[in-house]
Amino acid sequence: MEETDVIVCGGGLAGYCAAAAALERDKRVILLEKLAATGGSTVISGGAMAFAGTDEQGEAGISDSNSLLLSDLKAMGEHHNDVSLLEAYVAAQLDTYFWLKRLGVQFQSVQLGGGQSVPRSNRVDTRQMMEALDKQAQASQRFELRCNTQALRLHRMEDGGMEVIVSSAGGPSYALHARGGVVLATGGFSRSEEWLGVFAPAQIKALRIGGPGNTGDGLRMGMALGANLRDMGFIKGTFGVHPSAEAEERLLIHPIFKGAIAVNANGRRFVDESVSYKISGDACLAQPDGMAYQIFDEGIMDLSVPGVTTSDFRSALSSGHLIQADSIATLAERINIDPAALLSTLDQYNGDVERGRDTQFGRDGLANHYGKLRKIDQPPFYAYPSTSAVLATYAGLAVDSKARVIDVYGQPIDGLFAAGELMGGFHGAAYMTGSSLGKSAVFGRIAGNNAAASC
Image 1 (cartoon, one colour):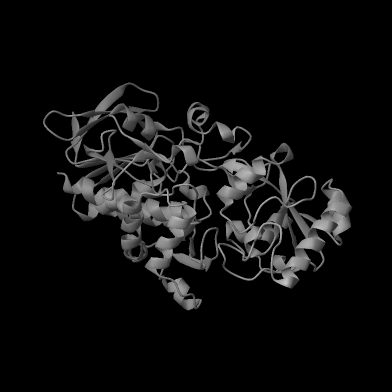
Image 2 (cartoon, one colour):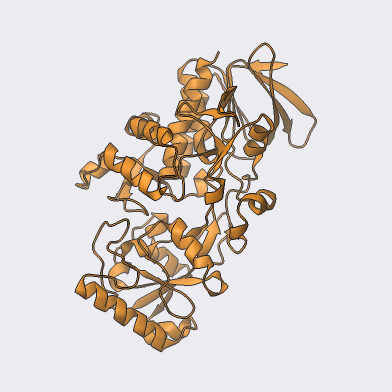
C-alpha cells in the first residue's frame, strides 16, 4: 500500500491551506483533486475574506476588532453557531491573513459586505491566491498533486492512520495510507440534487451554480464513519444572482449594499436590503416566480468598484445584464413592472430616507446597521434582474476547534479532519460575507497542522 504522512482531499483554498500547514511541519502530503484542475469553488467566488485588523483596513481608516468580528458572526448566525469554532476563527484570523501574505497571496482592497458592522471584505484575486499556494507547495519537494483522482471511501486502520480508497480518471480503485491524518476539504453539495432534496428542499426554485465538483463526496465519506452533521437545516441560496447565471459565470452583484432597493415583479419591496443576502435570498424565492430586481441610480453606479465581483456594476452594464433608463417610469416598462407601482415604492422609500426612518422594513443602514441610506433619485436609473442561487451549502460535518471530525456520540474520529465548506457549525442560521473563504483558510491551516501532528 502506498503511504504518505498526510492526505488532503480537495484542491480548493481549504485543501491547499491544509497542505501548506502540513508541509511547514516537514511532512509529505498528497493532495487529491477529482477534477482536471484545482481551485474548486474558490476560483469562482467573489474573493472576499473576512479578516479584522488588516493592513487594507488600516489604510482605509477602518477600525475593526476581534470582538466586533465575533459579535457579527454570532449575530448573523442568530446564535446557532458553535461558539468554540467562532472563537478559534477569531483567535487565528489575523495571523492567518499575514501567513497568506507570506505565502505570496496579494490582498487588493477592502469592501463592505453583508452582515458586516464595518467593511472587512478583504479582496483577493482568487486565481492568484491559488497559484501562490500551489507554487509554495510544489517548491517544498514533499508535495504531490493528483488531479482527476477521486477519494471514494475511508477506512480506519487497526494499527493507526487512515486509508483512503481512490480512483483515477474512472480507472480501478487503489488504496493510499496516511500515517498521520486525512483532511476532507471536498466542498459542499450544491451540485447534488440527491443531497439538496434531503437537506434543502426549500431551495427547489433556486439556481444551482456551485462548483461543479461539489457533489457531497466528503459528506458521504464522513457519514460512513459515523460523523455528526451541523447546520443542515439552515441551507439557503444567495440573493443577487442574474437568472441567466451559470457555474463559471455567476453574474452576482450587490448594489443593495451600496444603497439600492430590491423589488418584486409587482414593484414592491419585500425585505430589509441590509440583511445577509442569505436572508434576502429566501425572501426572494417567496416572491412571484422567485424573481426580483435591484433598483438603483447613477449616484450608486458611481460607487462601482472595477474588478470586485459583487461591486462591479459597470461591468454588468457593459455585458448587457443591467437594464438602464432615463426615468423610473421607462425603467419600469423595460422590466415589465407597473410604472405607477414602482414610482410609488420609490417615493415612499425616498421620503423615508429623507425623514431618517424606513417605515416598511426598518432598514437603517447599507449592511448590518453600517452606513447611511441614500435616496434613489439621480438619473439614469438601473435595474438588475436577480434571483437566489445555491452557490454553496455552508453546512456539513461536525468538527471541533481543532478541525477534528466529531461522530454522533460527540467523540472525535481519530485521524479525520475537515475544513472549508464541508464543515458545519460555523455559520449557523446565516452567512457573513467573506466568512466562507476566511474559514477555509483558517480551518484548513488548523486541520493541516493537526493532521501533521498525528504522525
